[in-house]
Image 1 (cartoon, rainbow, N blue to C red):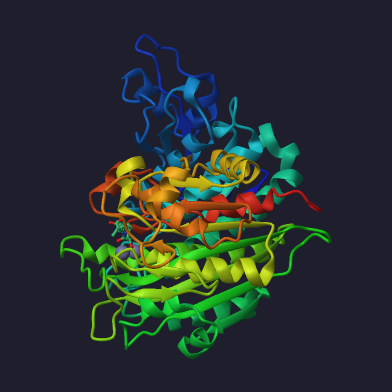
Image 2: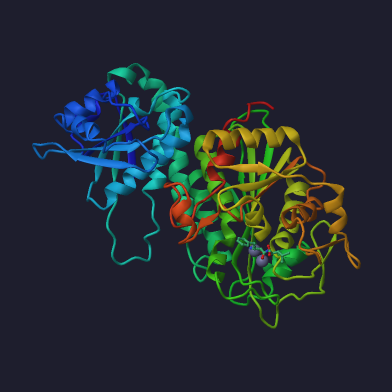
Length: 510
Ligand code: BES
Ligand code: ZN
Ligand code: ZN
């Protein structure tokens, strides 16, 4: 996908299709909406005819395609839902729905009439950003392994027209920024979707190094020998079962765009495949565990966007990568593992491996970079999906300001997160009999929160926010039907837009 701005009307660029939107219409509403006059003129009155026949209801996911009588181009009108509930998310979904609907019709160039998507409370800036998200993410599919493909909309012109042409300069800046973010989400999905035979810890390290060269990041990779010297017993224990794909700790540094900016560490769980290990998972749905690296791959995306956008804070990305498989060299239930900060983990279930690799990564980030804030992303617990569903990430934070910043970024990006409590009760539950902390408890209670209580042992008291993305990190054949149309099948790259927004909005010099 390529998107660009055009100050003229949507019809001026002679696209394969003009895209516009319509609000949901009331039962008794008969008058043709005045703001659709241009659209109606473009298809020579056919839009009003369809409206009069009540074929256009304006409901979410509704798509109407009308051809011009001369055969030169078409109009797609997409439902925006109720005007009273209009927000940027409605625009994001509507435009994603539009490009998806046009795919099967062989349409390659579209022009979006931006004024149709600007309405209280959505500003022209917010509408533009939502359109960019919608067309890039809605148009994305993982096609690397497909021999036969249908093709996709390739070019989107976002047309300002007489209503918005005066805002061109400001909107151009918003376009540049949001395009970088949306392209980065697509780039992240491409890596997160790679299967586990390909996306090994070493391959993720290669991706990080290439990225570093491309956008100017310092990248350091620690292999299993160096991890042993560093006493990263957690990553080594989890990665020890895989003789084919040994573990890696990957560190990326972006120097920051502000002179006296804060340092934010962003840490990700990178289990390239989670079979459960010796505590092996049941066969159904195990294939989805190739997405158990989504947190670490999101870190890669966040660092890419941070460098390209030159966000104010200094950002350190840490990816804890390992493959969790059973073998003669696997770690076992009962093992006592000493980690980077000296604390000992009692392993009671080898399937609770995410927190074990994160122990070293969090402690390393805290000790080496003295971050002002630590944010981690991890597909950590099945309990997260039970509690919040597959669209929302769980947020556990030890700092209210950091939590508020992330919640604001969530509002702005439409990536839903929900804050959950962390109390002494959860801390008590993860105390270990033989070590300091145990990686699993006997009772199936508050699994997302006991996992967070475990992680807290490794952040050295720094302001910290944990995002459990087990639900929203990927869609399945079943859940995809209920997800917004900009969520492709497979990896979603959840967290990239959210955390990038948070970093980009961080004030300079604080
Ligand atoms: N990777 C899984 C969590 C997960 C489950 C992510 C479903 C996405 C979808 C994690 O490593 C895991 O297996 N967690 C266990 C922890 C338990 C053994 C304490 C779980 O949630 O069941
Ligand atoms: Zn697991
Ligand atoms: Zn896992």
